[in-house]
Length: 342
Image (cartoon, rainbow, N blue to C red; front, side):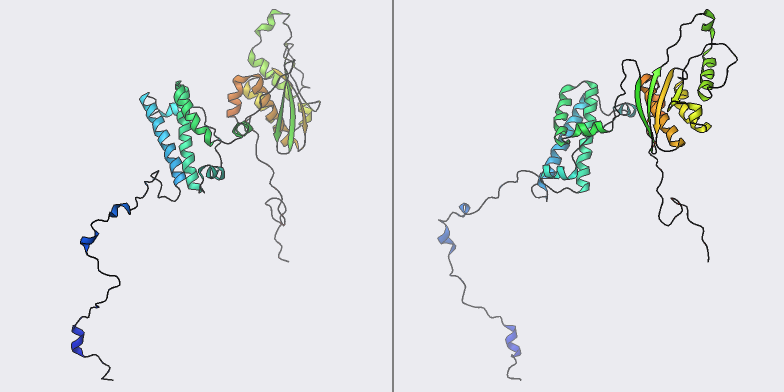
């Protein structure tokens, strides 16, 4: 074993090999070679986003942000930005129909995540806000320029989608009658509203009737047509017929009658219109709600000035609440059966 061991003195020396893998070439003999021809120059990237994972997406986003900055600079030069809060709230509501995430990814030739899609939509919404400001200020050139950019990202059926949520205008026939449709729960009401034809005043004393007396008399006539008035003062002959039946007869519960009369009282038009309705489906509560909805829509068409009042009272919007379905194993939607031990 001692024979195979390396002597301790040999470990202090380093051995070099005299054989090389390729022959030695003196540097002086390479002076006539031009090494610059063999070096390849890398092409310069076409865009700053060349080394990112999605250059097409970031190029488009950069161009949109550049257009946004130019629009902001132009509006600032015209002293339209920064816009006060009350002026920004006075702008018309922005309703856009941008393409969805999948279609936008196809346009940008890149798969978009939700965060990247929202980033593009935020820039487009800001551009649309600047377009509205330019439209109100009368800057046609800037408005057309922004419009040319934003319409590239709109849906093909944008006009149809934007008109889907708008209410159709109420049409009048040759006699001035309006037809509206009201809904509540599973009930529906078809409502015809006809202006009252005021009879000619024969006596000059009829002009002295106060408006409050006429309103109270008309309200009593609507709620209880069988009640006799002791006074001989002429009143309007407005009435409400539901399924060819007077209102007080068809809805015996006072709360239902009050619900039907509420839009007329709120608009201050008691005794001004004759109302004829056909209601179907549901119970008395749903039918009265549907009738009130149809009456409110008809009054807003006849009297555009009261439309704001009815809209703020939420009478022009259909009540979306529906009856909750019964669950299996329960007595009703949420009611449980009484627990019995045995």
